[in-house]
Length: 334
DNA sequence: AACCCGTGGCG
DNA sequence: TCGCCAAGGGT
Image (tube, rainbow, N blue to C red; front, side, top):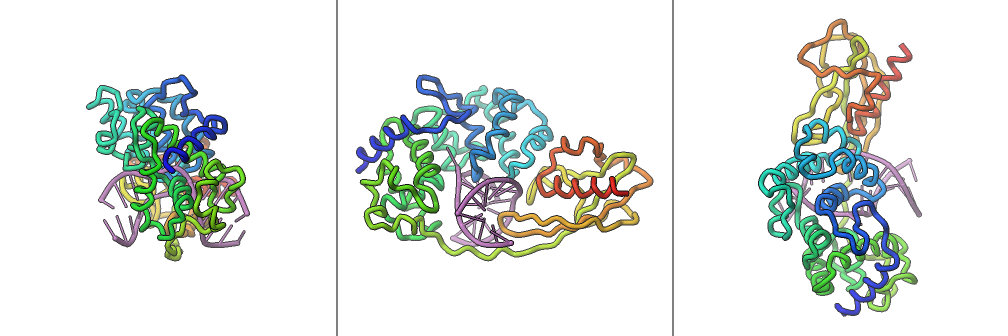
């Protein structure tokens, strides 16, 4: 099974693999910095969403030393809109550790990579295999889906995670495990998809237990999810002389470390006026946030005041970018 | 171990 | 329309 699976898969990958900006062409040497950056961005995020951010980051910061030397605020702003902002905070911390403690070179093995911020079991294995040619067991959501079908694993996720890891280990080849991992992920993305997998085009179909039983659509089995609660909030658009008041959110928690409109408590005594609301869905709750707007007769010198004409450059996360659009409309209507 | 943490596309 | 889903990690 092991050898058959990897040969069939690698043959398919050699022909049908995707061209991606971070992926080295055959004969090229992969750049660990670009592999690392792409892997962090791709955590729980689609290739289509990552592409423009990867291009922007590698243009502005072509090396890990360049990234390490950047200001936190620049990097957070550049990450705005991509989500899961702890990744950006860990990205800076990791770049500075690599630049400061490793001479600008990423560790070339899983155990050392695993010690760096933002690099967990999956990412350490992926970088070790793809950037450094190490044999590593790379298990992401694509691989879990493919393997759950190959072996018809009936135990539900996330409990079945260790079982799926062990099964992946049995089919991971000793060499070319980086290509094998990327092939599994491309297969999961293009053919062995969550709904309606295209088994007719799958190089692993002859080896697939679920396919043999005709039950491929039921895998991976997943535990029921808790219902998503709804919450309500208030944000404030306070402007003065063409500028709007912003705040830097606390480093931890929701949208941590990002610039935002003030929330919860009014930033000033003013004649606040309703300007509608924005609905936004986060991973674990749905939020309806009202927007209150006012003009201030003075400018608190301790606050962050951003020119409204350039609000698009502030690097607001999506929720606040949408609220800011409402605030600008309110302003133009007044 | 269970919970926290974004966003946009898709059927 | 809305729930599902995505190259997960931290605590």
